[in-house]
Image (tube, rainbow, N blue to C red; front, top):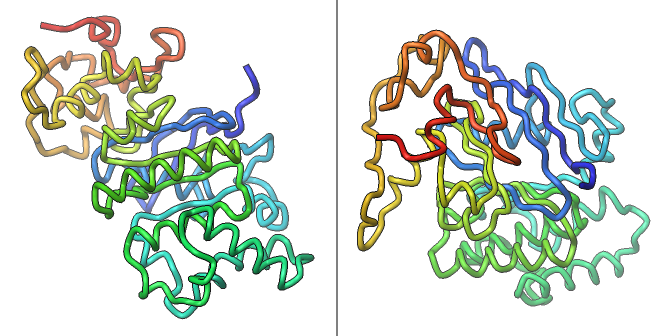
Length: 318
């Protein structure tokens, strides 16, 4: 297997006494799409911003093609940013209202390809607008003149104009109508195939994650609790939290024998500081779960689970 494009090791993010991301480890390969799922507040967006060094982690390493982004000097980090791009959740808020969309798409070219002439930049902007199913004459218009779906296409054009190695999509379709979501997802898949870029796709929409992703990371309270191929995870989730997430997805008609969603309970500070953070909501908790935090361990080829009972939950539990 080829070396990973992105290697994340022991990544931890703290906000004062609050531990937002806890000892995260995973790899991401060129051309691969990895989904990141979990409840609101699980730390997904914080993890994404730490990977891009939009905030400084407390510890760990993030290596992009062998360059540790957390330890490299500012000049090196600046050069690496052309390979790292992000698409945000709110398409209109992510665009400068005082810049035309043509200027917004051209800005990365001004920064990273200053040798281009003005005519060449305009040509690249026009081509990129056409590539995301807009028209070149829209370059002179402002963000408020576009719909939400069109603004997200502009955001994608701005991110893709440099042909990055890694594209982070932070809830990139959640604010769009369902019909528009499908169009944006297909656009991302086409650009990935064309450019060979890797995608980290953060979403609450498990159906979208299943459709897009080669592998899925499941996060709970800042910690990865399950990592598996998309096919294996959706066919047979192992961690109790993953099982609860999938059980919470509405099914019409209901699937016979599907596990019931777990009840919402309050989480104490001790739940996070000692033992498994999910134990208060877990129907399979053991006394060991209160004292020892289970590590993320490989239980099968390419399948990692942080659960003391993973050898049991690999098969249905009574």
